[in-house]
Structures are given as C-alpha cells and as structure tokens.
Length: 637
Image (cartoon, rainbow, N blue to C red; front, side, top):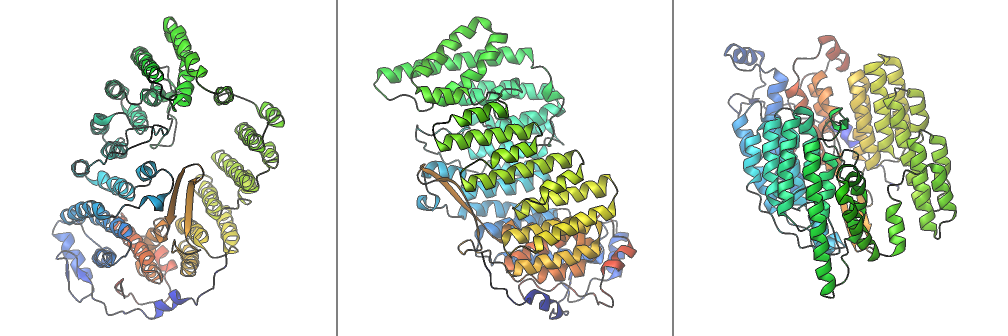
C-alpha cells in the first residue's frame, strides 16, 4: 500500500506553541491565568494534603481540557473511552468528580447505535451478540472502574438490561449470552488477586442466568488463593447448570475442565496470571468428581430422552450432535476410572449419537484429540482425499513438530502447504512461537534468528522488545539490549508508513524509554512522524480491518480499527516522568486530534502516577538545552 508523504507538520507545531496559556490552580479547579508556583506546592504539602509537583498540577489542568475536547469527537465510542480513562487518571486526586465521570460515561454507552445486520454479515443475532459495540465498551470501562471501586462497578452492572439473543438451533455458542453475567465475571477476575471473597460473590451473582465459560478462569484464579472457596463456587455452578437444561452438553464441557484439569474438551482459558499453578495440577477433588459425574450422567440421559422425542416427532437430527459426541467421548475415560458401573450406559449413548452422524464426520471427530506425531500426520496427509484435508493435516503436523521443539522440521512441513496465504500465515505463526519459546529460555541468539524474519511488524516489535527486556532486566546487559532495539528500529523503519508500522514504532519507543530516555525521545519522534503520515480512517485503504468467517459460511464478523488502537501508554508516561514538557509537546505535535488527545492523556498519566521525580541528572540528560518550560497548549488549538 502506498502513501503520499506529507510535510512533517507535527514538528513545526513545536515552534508555534502558544506559551501564554494559563495554568489552573488544581486545588480550586479554576483557571488562574498564572503558572503553578513552587510556593503553591509547598503550601499544599504543609496543609497535610498530598503534595503535587508543578508538572502534576499542570497535568490535572490538562485533563480538564482533554475531557472537554473529547466531547467534540465524532466517534462516540472513542469519546466515551477517553472520558472514562480521564476519570481513571483523576481518581486519586478528585475521587468524587472521577466517580461522576465514570458513571456518566457508562450510562452514555446506551446511546451508541447498534450496527445493522447488513453491516455485520452472516447470522445477525449471533454476530451482534459477539460484536456488540455497547457490550464491548461496557466491559472495557468496567475493568477500569472495578480497580477503583467494586461497589460502584456492581451498581452499574445492575443497570444493564440484558437483551435476549434469539439463536438458530443450528448454532451453538457456549455460555448464556447474558451481558450482566459476563460483566460480573469480568469484574470478579479483575479483583480476585486482592479480594477473592468478593470475587466469589460476584461470580455467584452471574449464575442466576446459567453457566458462562468465563467462570472457569475465575474459578482457577480463586483456587490459587483459596481452594475451598473455589470448590464452593463450583458446587453453586453445578446447581445452576442443573436448573438450566437448554444446553446440558455445553455446561458439561465447561465445568469438566475445573474438576479434571486435563479434560481436553473444556474451556481451558486463563485470563488471570499467565502461569499454571501447582494447585491446578493436583489430583482432582474426589468429592467434586462424584457430584460432577452424577450431574453429567443425568444431563446426558435427559438429552437422550429429548433426542428420542424429537425423532418421534419426525424432526431432523439435532444439529449439535457433533458437540455432544465429542464431549461424551472425552468424558468416557473419567467414567471408566471413577464410575465404571455407569460407563457402559454412557458408551451406549455415544453409539446412539454416532448412528445419527455421517461416518466421515465420526472419523474426523475421533481424530481431534489423538496425540499424533508429526510423522503420523504427514503419512495421513499423503493419503488425504482433498487438498484442503491435506493442508489441514500438514498444519497439524507442523504444530506437533513445533511443540516438540523441532522448529526447522515444522517450517519445512509448512512449506508443503499449497494454499499460499495459509502457508505464509502459518510460517509466521511457527516463527513467532519459536521466538517466544527461545525468549522464555533466555536464549536470545535463537530468538533473534527466528524473530528477525517475522513479516508482521507488530509481532517483530513485540518479540524484540521482550528480548531487550530479558537482556536489560535479567542479564543486566545494557549494550546488547540497546543493540537489539536499534536493530528492531532499523528493520521497522524500512517498512512503508502505515498503521502496523506506527504501532510497532510505539512499542519500540516504550521499551527504549525505560533504558535510554534520550534515545526514547528520538524514536518516539519517529513514531509520531509515522502516525502523521498514516491514514487511520477505517473507510480508507489505510484502515485496519479484521474479518472472521465468510459470507459463504453464513457467519462473518468484520471489525475496523482506527487511531484508538495506538498504544501510547508504554512510552509517553515514562518520557513524561523525565521531561513533562518535551513529552507533551511531542504528543501535541500529532496532527490527528483524537490520537493527540490519547497521547496527551498518556503524558498526564505518567506525571500523575510517578512516586518520585526522576533523578535530576537523568532529566538534564533528556532535556534540550536552554529550553524554557511552557505551559500546556490547549488540546483543541
């Protein structure tokens, strides 16, 4: 994609800044027309209140201006998102006002129009349930609020009105599609590390409408803190599943992964700390095993009776048979081990389902969880009947080789995939996994060998940043860390200006700022130039669009991303703690108003959250010589 390079207008803005804008007296929250003075800071400190340095006072003044500017945004979602983030930054300094701003932003979500079915594509009810902008934004803002005040978060959740989703019987989506339940669980997950008791209470509140897959990571996180508390929550979930008989197999698949950590059909997702704790690897609780398997047995037979009734009524076979078959097949070993007296009946039910399904489908499902070696999968690929089946087996073989650590073999297997787009994407995936694996072992040479060939700029920036962190934080090798980051910047700088390059440059600038503030400012300036040369309008070629599914499959979700996907929160806060004004001027030189506001907000966060001022010598190193200290320019100028 080609772009017409613009003049570097952002840099010219620095010379044209209005240095006469008045600062605000933060304590009174009024515009004073005078720059906050050192005496005001000393006075505040002597009164017993939290002492604010001049940069922090000016940051609070700027937050007010950014809040007003955000009201002018044409993008309602971005407007609400920015106002909520401002409330979060303001919380420790004016909690009452921040609380009001949070509540107002949350209520304003109801006014966001929902997309029309033709804008989503595919099955409208399902697509809207998964791609609802109101639902996504509520979730994002609740995460901010729950960190500050769980009671306020719970109060706002109760104001959400669940809109029933009418699903076709051909479509199975795990969970209850209750937005309230999902928000309760997300809030629980956000506070579980600090308040597992309250997290469990919130999770119980979600069970009134059934069992949602999000319950599993909540259970896992609570178990790391208090196993008895997690087991009690699980028993409550079993009761809720028994009351909701609309999708018994889905409930079995979700809940089984808590009782049996190695149950492959469950939802083993972890949205909490990124580690597998020893607790999760312990033997299953015998009491829970008995209760769960009894629940599963009764649910399976209840579903069998419903299937017989449907067949008697002349209705077509249950379209969810494949899911039922796979779940029951994966449960059989546990019945054999813990309830052998009931295993025969379960096996008989499995045979009944199999008779209603095509033989080819049964073979496919039976092979899903086979622990095949790359050699076995390659052999099956040679006898595949279609090219699509062959490519699928080759992808499985490549993943199997990658899991064994045989990366070169995995790449050679990928090269045999005929579909060019799939081959390229899968090779990138193998390289990415190999790089992350090497970084986890602190093998930087191997990580560099695979990481430098990643075609995706964001992935490349991400892994090079991780390499630099290992070198700097763990190996204390500053020269090598900077060498890696400089190499990453050169590789990214050669790419064509665009959204991917802008995001990658911001990632590199954020890590460099931790190591060398002066170099961090230089790379951030390059990132700003890239942003100013990039068209982020999702309706234009420069926009970023992601599509899941296809029209031919009857299911498609298309999501567009704009300037709000730029992450300014890694580099700008660190640079602001070194030199608030230089970081602010750089943020204000971004030509796109929305992106500039997001960057300025990140600058304010850096000034407000610093526990102490940076060392004077470090600040002097980063500042430009003989530069006067201006007050913030109004963001809408």
